[in-house]
Image 1 (cartoon, protein in one colour):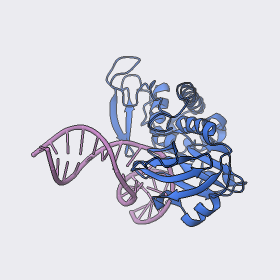
Image 2 (cartoon, chains in turn yellow, brown, green):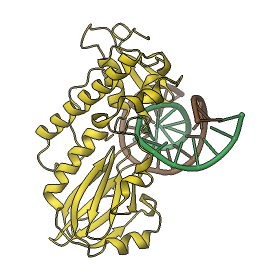
Image 3 (cartoon, protein in one colour):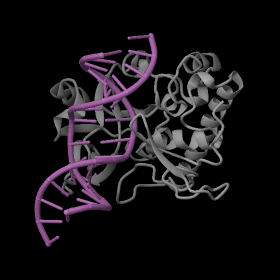
Length: 270
DNA sequence: GCCGTCACCTGTGGGC
DNA sequence: TGCCCACAGGTGACGG
């Protein structure tokens, strides 16, 4: 599932392939992917050039001549570039026919992803992006502290709350708790100021390292599309044994999410 | 306002 | 072999 580093990898890779291309037409094969009026979405994008691709948290923002649209990959969304005329895959849901005889195809097995037309000049200040907190790289301590120190929710649940810090998903939330040597069930309000500062720093490190790995391993598209396939250096998520002490990694459910931790190394609950 | 639960989806894997 | 069911998870809506 794409989190901030994967989405950043997709953004960088896509830019090499589709920048400055004109969208000749848009084919929507599964309407619910598009939030709002599908006809309007198609008409607005037709004959527009792709000027830039931005990203905020897990959202991609395609900047066009006069419009912009956002794309959230959710669980399994990915983009493929195919020569126009290549038979569609069963899960190709939105097709952008480009001027260089290629298609940009949005493929999503579970149909969870969403696209939406947004105001090109103001998208960061309007929903849904305006509801997001800051990315760990830019996070202000006071804002994060304010939201965490008064919550009785488990810290791992708070890491997944995109209005506190944006860009962290289930995998990196598990990794961040491990790196902090902290039990993922620790209540937010039990964390000291020092630990919350450390939480921001560790989140930043974990995402930065993942972006670097993505940047070095993904140079072009593979058969499966662009989705940032580089989850190779994980310490706890879906792991069997702890990389530090060798103990068995335990899996529990926290607020409905699979949560992995080392019961020996992550004992501290503050 | 805070928090828990559910719906949205389909592929996968376990049990029978 | 084939069928059924639980499960995976990001987000938003809804209800207590």
